[in-house]
Image 1 (tube, rainbow, N blue to C red):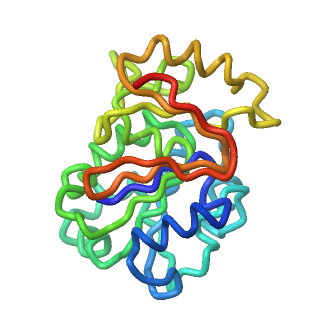
Image 2: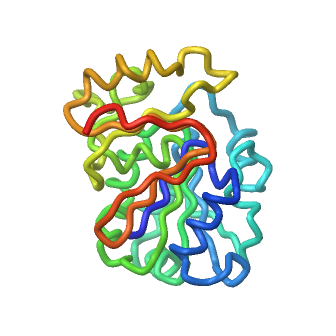
Length: 222
């Protein structure tokens, strides 16, 4: 898949332009499926915050961008209904909008639901993640960002990209997400690392990786 890995959603014109480029057509002509699953694994999230994401009322612009249609793909339900029912929904969508929350919980349910197995067949689709919805694609998230893990689990996520992400850099409501904290976090990650504020994103497409930003970001390890 083509990836738009954001910290705070499609929050400015530069990130929106990158999204339209990945889609290859206007947002108004694209159908989206939103995935709120990561919300349920994080202690800060609630049923209300999950609803705000789905309804397009979250602080991170995602479902409210003017899509031709938006549906909900809840990964916890997929094992119960079978792939024959839900895989065509994914194939018919242009984009998957993946909410934040807990990246380990999201990784677990991507495996359990079967969505991870389907991703290689979706080369023409776009994955737009916010926070944990972006971090899930990385090899590791670091212990600082683990609030849920299966028995015997680590901080390892899906590893579909070769870099890790420290999100919400210098966020006014997240006083521990400083650049100094990001630099300490990066020391424990064996591989390339980026720190992104909520006005920054990483585009992964056609074998290349680039940062799109109208804010603050750092590449902490190469």
